[in-house]
Amino acid sequence: MAPRLLVVFFSRSGGTQALCDAVIAGITEGCPAVDLRILSPFDADVDDVRWADGVVLGTPTHFGYMSGALKDFFERIFRPLLEETVGKPLALFGKGESDVDGCVSSVERIVTGLRWKQMLPPVTAVGPVTEEHLAAAHELGAAVAAGLDAGVF
Ligand SMILES: Cc1cc2nc3c(=O)[nH]c(=O)nc-3n(C[C@H](O)[C@H](O)[C@H](O)COP(=O)(O)O)c2cc1C
Image 1 (cartoon, rainbow, N blue to C red):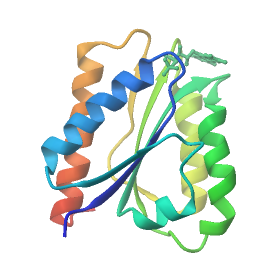
Image 2: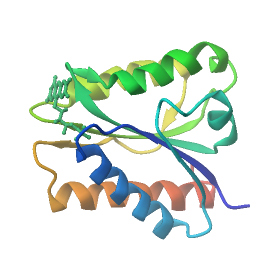
Image 3: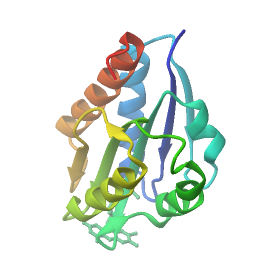
Image 4: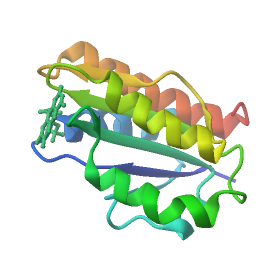
């Protein structure tokens, strides 16, 4: 059966959206039959996470942290899923203007609490989105989709 992949991302001014578009292009290339669900953090809920074989999260840096949107998602799903989704495969991409480390570590702390497992290192972009950033995002999506399809993750 084709893998079910949930992409949850937020973008206020298009930077994270550009990364997400590249991730999604990579996903559909890595596994054309993938069952893909793409949602805003405000719309994603516990049942979307339960449905997914893997989760990809994308967020800009806001005040040195993940976006409030993604934090809202975690606040709603954390307790209901705490014991239920241990080992859920996860990938992450983040965007910042001058720094993205606090953003990434804020997400990593929470997914560590959930005991989700990162499939690959996060893809990050600081400053204007470059072709290198987009290539890395594409590669992340392709590797995640192909890996889930092959049962690697
Ligand atoms: C409210 C707010 C807070 C931000 N805080 C930070 C920050 O702490 N560090 C940083 O590097 N960029 C910060 N930024 C810049 C964004 O992370 C950056 O512009 C990013 O590319 C936005 O992504 P988006 O275009 O997907 O919305 C902030 C932007 C906003 C709107």
